Length: 414
Ligand SMILES: Cc1ncc(COP(=O)(O)O)c(C=O)c1O
Image (cartoon, rainbow, N blue to C red; front, side, top):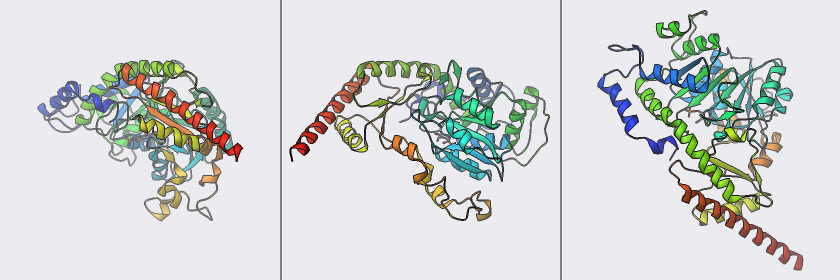
């Protein structure tokens, strides 16, 4: 079960029932539709204040938020967007849906985009890059922002997995040009589905609203920021009041969720201590980490398999992928298709998969993910659970090492 999902309770029910009691499930329609203070408007106001952006906009999902953010930036056919090769499906598919080409970048030991990739991959077509704050940890933002600035490209912060995380004291989502969040199942807070687009840029805000609401810019938004741009053909990604009600109740829980996770994580690290031959995920700014997933790199894939088996035998939940895979391994990348052949941004490559979209093009990413393991912490965990997990990790690792050294002795004796 997801983090926020475990906590759905009285507050979520109260706000959702308030929407139903008012018979006002639409943000803009129905009796009194659009009248302040609606749930979506309240969520946006509170979210923007907490994230530290001038604007926040509720939409139907994190994927919709990515498409809205790309559209707000004016990304379209002929453009390229740099995306970490190891990231969620929609980081790639949202770019394709807009008719632009995702260009895949290696990740580094932070499990976020390697900042050195930005200069290497930027071409005259590159308009933007996506920085994905993977599972509660802000990417290396100083280096990434500096490289993006030098390359002259815009930065989309994908904070779907990291609401509440900070980087050098600044909330993620407030540092790039535009940011997205998600309320999907495996996120810190949830609302069934739903997402947020956040930005400080008034022009991007207006375009994001138009992109999410059929090109329109209604009075509510006009009051916040007078329109300066033109209508264009947008989609309908408007957040419903019911979604907003649940998201708002969950969002108000975020500070306590983050505090609890951070205290569990500190306890786990203390319990485990240093593990010989094992490396930790590099966290650029440890104080800002949410701590709900602890990543370890083992020396090689064989010891990773043995360690996982030992943890599973002790009943400890330890996964390798947490739903993320390299894009080159996914069907939509392997075939390079869009919804229609002419819409594929890969059509001009003479062969497919072209260089840059094949497994062998990402040796550094592969070397990391083949040796990595994730130890999740639940929001309902207490200190005893963490102590159990910590002890199991230490025991499992020492058993693996002992086993490996016995095998080495046996091999040498042959
Ligand atoms: C990094 C990342 N970006 C985008 C999304 C898309 O969000 P959603 O599932 O709400 O469409 C997700 C989650 O699924 C995600 O993990």
